[in-house]
Amino acid sequence: MAMFVGVCGTMSLCAAVSLDLGHARAMASGLRHLNFRCTACANCCKELRVPLTSADLGRLVAKTGRPASELVDWLETDSVDLTGEPGSLVVLEQASKPALMTLAHRGNACLFLGLDARCAVYDARPGSCRLYPFDLTFGPRGGVRRLRLLGGTRCDYARDGHNDPHALREADQQRWSEHRAYLAQVQTWNRSQRHRLRFGHRALGSREFLHFLSVASEATSGNGS
Ligand code: SF4
Ligand code: SF4
Image (cartoon, rainbow, N blue to C red; front, side, top):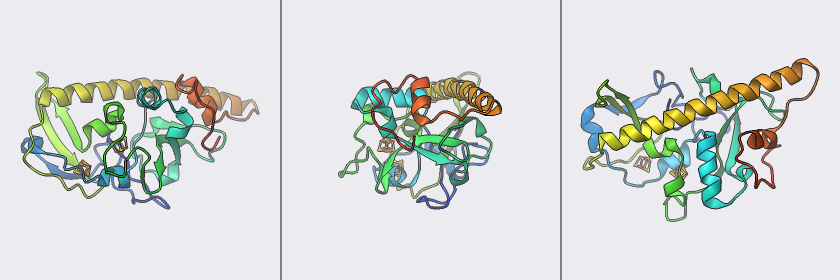
């Protein structure tokens, strides 16, 4: 699972990164890249889109006090490169095709990117942001077996960093665990919506989906619902 997705069409970046790591383009690989250091250029926060899980969204709602619906953009299938990862697509009434729940952009950047190019929700940022641009595979004893730095944007990183493999592993495990839980929720939701459609009812909208995820109790305004 890639951390960010490239987008096509009217979006700011043509598809470059897939949710399937087998297809994702790496800008570098090798364990020596544990010396990666982010220089806070903020290009990834401007040019890539962040798929959200319910856990990501719950943390952001708790951190900001804002309705979940204000934090989300829905990207339809055609505008996202989702090769090999259809399980995150949500069946919604207002979308002509299943859509991906992503962190909202305002202007040409993530809505949490400050004017100082810093993340305004750093300690509550999504799991994908925590790991970008690392794509890691771990061995049976927990050591890093393979490391790639994902591309998709111009990442102006430096090579004098010191990344702790154990901290990366913990972050990676948490992200995968939350991703799996979210996929199960999406599967349950989509099954119920297809059941509704089969019996001539409309599918429910994004507001109902956020309530289903139990992250939208404060929701007062919608985003396309
Ligand atoms: S949540 Fe923070 S780190 Fe993630 S894309 Fe937005 S500004 Fe960047
Ligand atoms: S593009 Fe690379 S160097 Fe720039 S903020 Fe993102 S991770 Fe850091």
